[in-house]
Image (tube, rainbow over all chains, first blue to last red; front, side):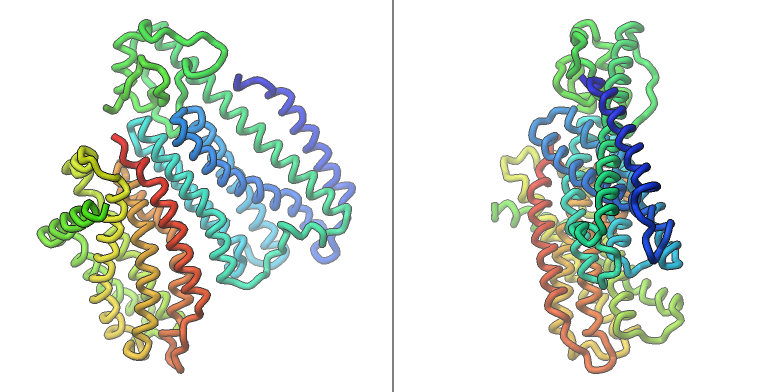
Length: 282
Length: 224
């Protein structure tokens, strides 16, 4: 279920990226003021837009998790926020390079967009430590969702507040693509699409990997019949029985040892959809 | 609901009066921070923007001390369990804790703000006091709401003393922006002006929105 469509998505991403990079380097005209360095715009802005949308999306998925209590939504929310954080690092780095090239400084404080992005990034940087320092998996996913909802709502609020506090210096890109000359606008939109596809592909890869790892762990537990030493992780782990086409392992065969080992290790299955593993922390 | 909140508030104040864990520590911290600012800035007095910055940094970090202590007793001594056993609305705990934190902030500012006026501020506090009280009230409300939400999130983690401020500071940045912008003209040395209405409005809106968010998600933090 998680792997389905992965190949098609990957190919579409690679193709769109090829087209986007071709447009960036061979089609879009050189900007008169900034010259070649302006090309980073086609990477930086899509990175920022996609990662911010990802943060908000993480909040929406977290609402779904709290409503349904399905661990899959928590996994989605986690993966989406994780990928957005990685894209966020990219945004800050490319933004700094661009700022150095066009304004002469690596960091400019009177830039509302820059500053608010940094604040949002700092807030989301605590997402993983928060997950990591809660032992009980059920509580971990619940608290992470609460965080994701509050932080997701904070993203637009923070942008409004910081924008209120400073002048308008940053090139306004959202909503004024009409100011861009046609070839530039086309290149930008294709780059944005490419970045969104890349984001979706990476999220799908991570979800598939997490799901596969959960399945492997469950199978290994079943084979050895005893506790496996597992590393601690901030990521939510799905019980293999909760989804997927493979037959769910019978709750009985997992046995009491598995249930006890689940209580001992914090990386225990987080879902409550299987009766074998009750509430590990309870 | 009102009776529940009243009972919880009474309990909070009783605990604070008997242990004196939060407010005196916050006040002492604020005064020490003013002394540190005197030496760090190497200035005998501050005014205007600088004064607003010193005041809000100090109040914010002192408030963090109160936020960190807010739920510790409940988590360690079974307060959460006792509350969950009672057949009452869970939002009552959010409201009671936020009101308690608001009261702690108000009491501690009774000490900290006059101390700031005495130790560091160059223009006298008297003339701008009514306006400053308004800014303080709006900012305190926001700190109380966000602080309560963050404290409830952080208290069940292993690194609670670290995570509380890490979570709270980015969320409080808009409050600091509004409060500092609104109080800078009040603390200016030449003809203290009124604080621009849009900052007060911004503070109020942020308080309102985060109050609603906290109200919506708080119940999920109390399910054990």
